[in-house]
Image (tube, rainbow, N blue to C red; front, side, top):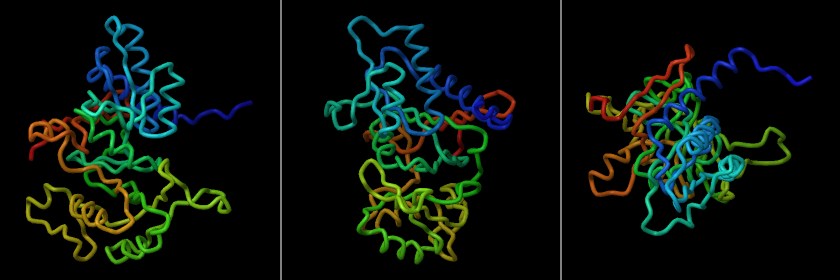
Length: 288
């Protein structure tokens, strides 16, 4: 007899599904050509919602919807739903994704995100920054005032040859307990990403937000206290680091208004709540 889900797990999954369907309803259209599909656990429900939308509202004649995965797993989710995947590096050079749907490990009140719990952060950031808008889907546990409140660490993708020196530099930055992510079965070694890189999980003190800095806080790393943007930039400077699991800066709307391609931050986050409702945090509603 299969193990039954606990009521709490059922509630969390129901919250994710409700948030995913609301996000897709408000941001997906059958006429879209390229759509990004992330790697988070909520994305299974996002793809389900897209499939239902296309069934009810088919695309125009001779139009094809292409879905850009952020890793091997999300490609399989796309294929299993009967949708058409296209690799990121197969996109036409001038193509922009209309929207990218993805999850997050934690989201702060300014919509900065921690991502990379599933070890797909590099491709997730590539796809988000090639999209006109990144729409985030999460459950109520992920909503926090500041990053590193509940989620314990920042995922960092590193070249295998450099992992020891990156760990040393992270300790100097204030993360003495940074660790290489390994499989649960030790003899299988470190977890590898789709780029055959390693993941380091680096705990830091709860991060300040850009709003804290505007209000006079010091997030330069003194006494181990960093703000999101300063820490992301400093870690990215370490030789051997491919990408940092902090999604910050501008969102897609702001990037395009400035003549840029896309942004790391979501334009909106859909939080599925315990009571079955969906709370939407939109970038334009956040006071800067």
